[in-house]
Image (cartoon, rainbow, N blue to C red; front, side):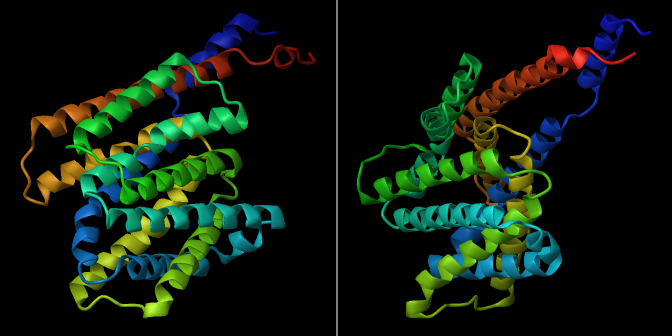
Length: 318
């Protein structure tokens, strides 16, 4: 019979060396934020010709059609409760997108980016209020660092008005969406839930855009940008976020997602012709520090869960 202490030590070593689901989920979510960050200058150019609601409607309807064609079996496999969850999550995300877009018409883009990023604070606060989540001090430190990084990256003065209020409401809805994914998404339902969300978001935006008619891109370059944002930054990213959050806590996911403005600044330097500034370096460094602390705390929790299983799991029949 193997020695229990030896068995537990081996388990700890395997856990330390083998990539966990949480690690893969974090890497996938980082990739998603990189894709989202790459769309900032594309969206800026596209919405100069296509109204925001029209853009969102066409983007997510294309994503929904593509996902429905590929994943219709996974959607049919969802039960009624899971379908309702997908509809609610899609409505939260769709309304948040619309509020953020309307708010952007009344405030500076930099202020909008910072206030939207406040979901990193609202996620643990709302989670603690609604779900009675208890978070360690290291997580709150990570939240504080990430928020400070967002402020350094984005803020150059802020006034409180209609645009800021709408954007803060959007941030709250994004936080609820993140909490909902963390609560209800599973690896087996991720594809189906993501597809339902894309359909709901597309239809919601279409209802808003339809009264004035839907304006479509005018040339091949605009269509190429739209297809990239629909298929890669829309369909693939929505699935990836849904799957990743089946392996991560909501707060941990929110902290990782604050990398989006860091990638946006990076792409602005590499592709947009902007210069790297001390503000970008400091803000990006603070966000990265917050993410590192969140990941370190999350991995320690993962190792403790694997090394110290419930006592009944250590008793087995000879």
